[in-house]
Image (cartoon, rainbow, N blue to C red; front, side, top):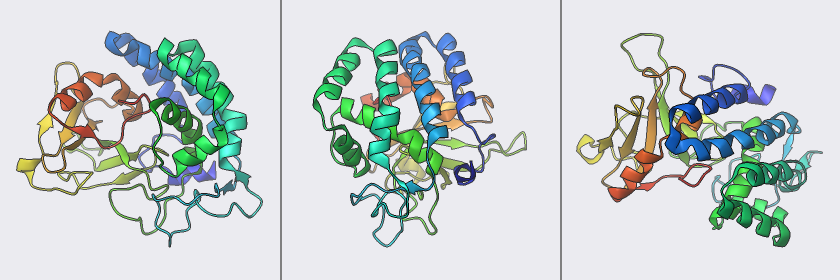
Length: 289
């Protein structure tokens, strides 16, 4: 559990999975439009939780270079895999992937189920995991399987570097931000700091409030905000007219029970609206939205 200490200082507990499970159940009953997505995510939480707690230590690196981490930084995801650790892609395929496939077959939509079965029968799965870690181009089904299998392992092993490569990438694995959120500050009328949450390992880092998390634009007139306050009072789209990117931002002061990585799955209408405005998400979530 020591590896978890570096994940997120604002995390209320060292084990994030019970809160995710509880929030998934809560939102599935609140938002019928997201019931199918949340049902699949709920099924995935069991094998992902098991993977998180079963992650060996130390984490050995896959023997592939990654463009996500500066060569001068000793990333736990990139290197020679020496020192008696384990090989991450092989471990994911042997110990995590079977549970992910079972959960997908049980709760996923037919197209995804068929795609997962076909991929399992024909693909070089360890190579698939390596390609995802190296940020290679993958099909949606390949990305889904690799991310669901590897992300809990990366989350359990997240160790931020000092200094980070740049403020737009995760200091633990080099991933792009999936979303942002304002943490609780302890004062009723004051928002807490803004964090970005990594799309690969769920590590969080502090980021400037009125700044695009993709290109660094800080001119407020170039940073449109879209919100559907009645249905999602704690969520909004933070867009950028300069790079045409966006992400969803969650204000925990407006809903202290929110778990941003779960709530984002329920906010598909905001994603659809952002796309209608010609914006592209910086990094899609696990379900591809």
